Length: 419
Image 1 (cartoon, rainbow, N blue to C red):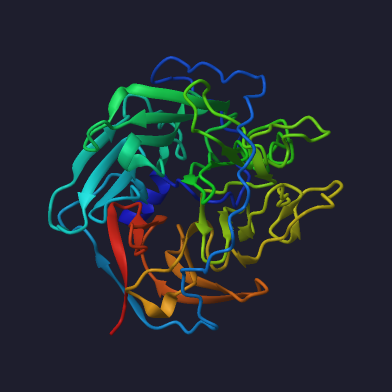
Image 2: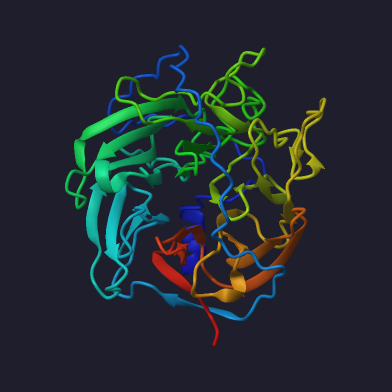
């Protein structure tokens, strides 16, 4: 009964099995509407440095995958959360981990003291609009040099818009709200399909996932529209003080003959709620929430078109000429197995030898946790690890590469290998 009530009240990630009524833009803003990002092209960052000599891969990549048996443990028995959506590490502390709540709170916890209480770190509840089920504080990323500069970046919704902002933590214990530097805003025509993940890539650039703008079936064709920020993976250079951000010189559409947003890295996505970098295999992996039939996992490449809304996974979805450059998913599953994919991470930690090099992901509705193994030719082999009653809204990694499961019902769990 509890799970049913939560599903009815707060289905953040659920795919649309029946086309809903078009959802209006929220009419009750929390604060004034943010200033639009200037329409002119932001300056281009300096040319990328020459590639460094290939170094030996530090990650363990077994020749084959043989899963073991697994269980979960409550990571923080004394701490519960209100609609948690992400668990993030700061890149320098092995003790600290941060949990993001949808309504705008970020809490700091000590991994070395799992029975300790959570500590408020960032409070954006007066900025964030949560009037729609898929709206709120959706993403958090720490700058690669956070230990030195104190910069962190957030993705949140406010009055029908997505806002990407930078904040500063001068003492690494709290965040000064007055330090907000708004980098990018873009309109959301409906309240759902907002994407939300922020991650710094190995190249030092900030990657942003955006959904197709919502309703059902991408009625405005946003995902295939290169002048729209929606239905995309975006890539920007945030290492500037003179501008909101810069455009990386090797972004794929920067010099396109078509009219296109230069921030776009990849497109044709429906709602890439979670994505991650697999540095061991040099991959960018995105889990794209499906419409009524298919959930998919995509290997994102620069300039790639992943087909939505002409395709849902490998299946034709909308009449019309399909994109000739459509990149199909590396793996997909039907709604008989799960109805809202939650992307995770490729595991390279020390605690679970059996999962080395496997991509761990789950489903918000079914609670299933899987491992996807890719061979050297990216042929996929999928294994069920656990069936749970969790509403899996996210996975997370600590600075040691150990894996955590975020349950939207309020708990954080650690995945463990059975002895």
